[in-house]
Length: 318
Image (tube, rainbow, N blue to C red; front, side, top):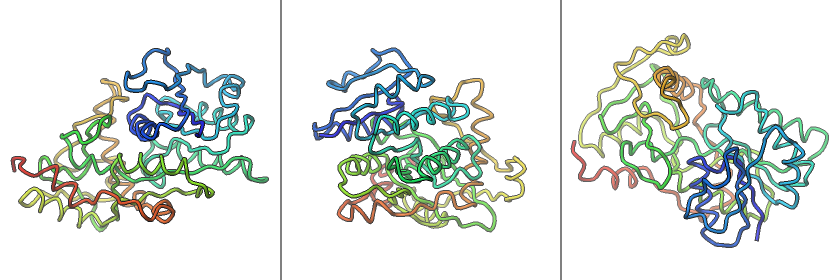
């Protein structure tokens, strides 16, 4: 049995991972939350909830004593200056936690995505923690984009909100960056959760970079597969990299579905910024994910993009 702490455990990706960790019924799981204890889902019987103040490092140290693994899903938009995660890292070191995973769970870098600047800052902080000798084993879990988003508006997992991106199967359209046929990695959130559950039990040392490569292929191939699945050609908008870098979006459409963490009054600007950032980051290679966990878990079978999308969109109106 492993003793696991989940920071930010009420988030969608965290809940998918928690479900996978709970399935074998062999782990002692504690969820940390800023919110009042009592919001826990009725499906999570047997899990310990602790309300914590991430500003109080001594409190965090007390909570983390005797813990084997800390998985952080702290929402970056709610952690200015990365203070909560830095305190959590410091507390993990003091408490003698063996393994730590920061709030990563996406791209290989935050290039082009200012809302994820904190991820790169936390990576640098973790490097400094071990610069005079390893005191904390950590892994940056990077699954790329969730393949589930190509099913939007259809919900294909228990907790993840369907979001659209620059390849929109529902409306048979896509946006591409001129001169950039970027490699994109798409992994289902279920596969991410399953890999994390296996990683917690993994007897070897965690890799520092924890790439999880469900499907990696160029944008042109993803569009080709999407057109086959949807039974017809897509409308393709082409944008210039220079326009994106200036914050200008010249495409004929924008994102519509927003993440629950984004407030109503911020939604319009955030959706534009996210679309610009996704296109920029793809051109900069941020979604070309490595395969460290594929190598360590060679028997794990990932959902394949053709089969996944075929099953989701079969029989749907064209």
